[in-house]
Amino acid sequence: MNRNWFRPWGWLFRPTSVAGWVTFSLVLVFCIQVFLAFDRHSHSVSDTLYGVFPYFVCSFLLLDWLASKTGGNR
Image (tube, rainbow, N blue to C red; front, top):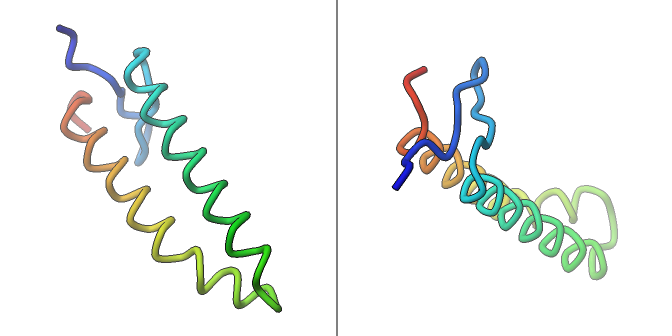
């Protein structure tokens, strides 16, 4: 099985396999859903940002960790 799901691209990683694209897409869809759920009930922009921040940070840190483990060397 090919373990190279991602390839280093500067400071970031870009998906290079189907598994990488699926993982990236799932994180992106999750973040969009979280944004829409918080934005629906917030009263201001700062409410939305404070609400989505923990979810976005955890999601993208998990994606970065997974990309660093399944990608090449930086």
